[in-house]
Amino acid sequence: MKHSAEPPSFPKIVHDFFCAYLISQKNVSHQTVASYRDTFRLLLQFIRRQRQREPSDLILRDLDTDLILEFLKYLEVERGNSLQTRNARLAAIRSFIKYAALRDPVSLAGAENLLAVPFKRTESRLVGYLSIEEVRAILDAPDPSTWSGQRDRVMFATFYNTGARVSEICGLRLCDVDLDRSRSVKLHGKGRKERNIPLWKDTIAQIRQWLGRINSGSSSPLFPNRKGEHMTRSGVEDRLDKAVSTATAICPSLARRIISPHVLRHTTAMHLLQSGIAESVIALWLGHESVTTTHRYVEADLAMKERALSRLQEPTTAPLRYRPDDSLLEFLETL
Image 1 (cartoon, rainbow, N blue to C red):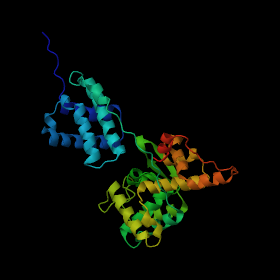
Image 2: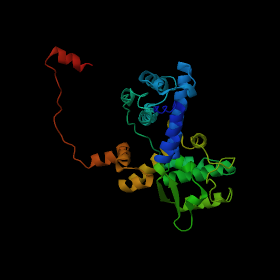
Image 3: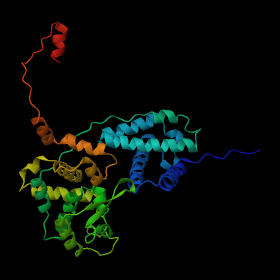
Image 4: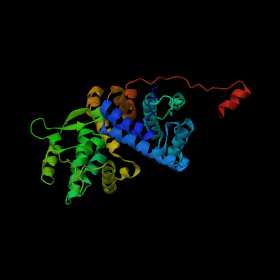
């Protein structure tokens, strides 16, 4: 008499989800693996506190709909995560549920209910951008007499030149820069997609000077931290905050701004757009999957809209005033 095989344990399914499915089969990027890993760390720690269950003792049935909804509420309320972050965590959980349901369909008989937990709709907010004067103030802010100040000057200049994502700047190596033949830098974007961005003469000159201050190994980071390792996202954000604080004395308008590495990227896109560069070229420059993503920058440029409006002849019509003819309609007008 044959006995049916024992279903895999929860830890085994989690291990296979990351190693066999995400990494070996789907070949997702390191950033995706890290994002999913962080989601599971948060989820398992949440279960330990709320259900008094150790992660290694869990079974698939423990992942019920109520638990996932409680976890998502915890992310928003207690951790203060944005809806975008909440939705990203849910996407990771849903991906795991789909995989686990194939590995142990009996234990996840209610997988449909879990997969029915909806994403929350988010507002598409406009990202601000800097004027050329504000950019110059930030680029000149780091102290050139210090090693870190020299690095920051070159790093921010490369940021503005390339419109790179912060992860792409952090990941740059010496072998990604060609200052002689193509005079460009190779960026490693999302989904392992690469793109080459040309460099201005001034950026090339700054990088040449900077190369004499760091390790010359081809795989060495172009913008290392004090330990000679790749900078982290938070490290770059801290250095940018310091530069903005210094630049505010010269350019007071910066005091009213919230400036992140993404704002520098957005600024590059806007300045390219205002210079008359086609959206399709900007999409390639920024590494966008679709021109639709790039088109959002047009939505942010009020000056371009005002120029377009000025070309239209304003109609002259007598003003009309709406007068409700019913008391209920009049009440609604007051709301």
